[in-house]
Length: 295
Image (cartoon, rainbow, N blue to C red; front, top):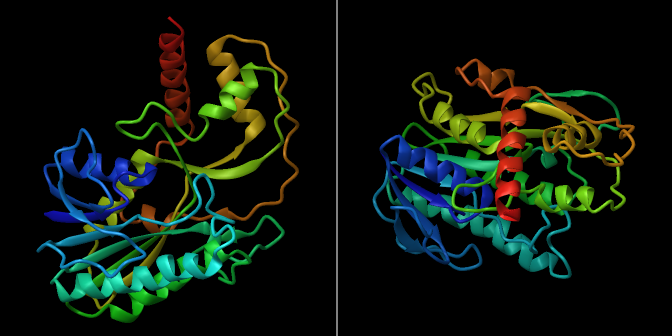
C-alpha cells in the first residue's frame, strides 16, 4: 500500500510511519518538513493552508494537529479562531482533497477528549455521549463528523479515539515522561494524576487493524476506542524507581474519578495491546538509556 501520513514528525506519526515502513509499505509524509532518518517521500502540507494536490495513494492517516507546543487541551492559547480554522476547517479540506485524489480509506486520529466529562467511573464506549468541554475535543469531534459526511462505497473512514500515548518515538531520544522522571530524581514535588495510556506501537498496530477491516458490509465509517492501561502516576513512578534502584518520595494517589475507555470493538479485529508487560519493558529500556546518558 501507499500511505499518506500527516504529522509524521510528531510522536504518534513517528510510531505509525515506522510500523508501515517496517511492514514494507510505501509512505509519503505530508508536513512542513521531511522526516529525518526515514525513507519516506515528502509533500509539503500545512493544516492552516489549502491542501496541495495530493500524490496518488491508497490510504491517508491524519495525525497532524496544530496547537501550542506541549498543549492539546488548551492548545489554542490566545488564538481560538486560528485553532479552529486549522484543525477543524483544515482537516475537512484535507479529507475532501484525499477523496478527490482517489484515496480509498482514511484513518483519523481523534481523542478521548471528545467524550463528555462523566465525573464518575463510567465505562466509555464508542456510543457514549460526546459533548466535550474543551475546544480540543470539539475540533476533534468536528473532524470526525467531516470524515463521516464524505464516506461512501468508494471512500471509507476509521476514527481512532486514542488515549494518552507513551513510549519513545522512533528517531527521538525523549518521551512524554522524560521531564517527569528527571523531576522525580531531583526530589521535586509532583502532583498526583490518574490517566489512561497506550503504547505508540500498539496504536500503530491499531491503525493496521482498522485498515484491514471488512468494509464490504456497508460499514464505510467506524469509530474505535484505543486505550490499554489505567495508570496512576504513583504506580508509574514507583515502578520507575524500582527499576532505577533509587529511593524517592512518591506523589499521593490520585482520587479520580475517571472515565475508563472500552477498546473491545478494536479487540474484535484482533488488536492485542501490550498491557503492563509493555509498560515495564519501556521503563527498563528508559532506565538503560538514562544510565547511558550519564556515562
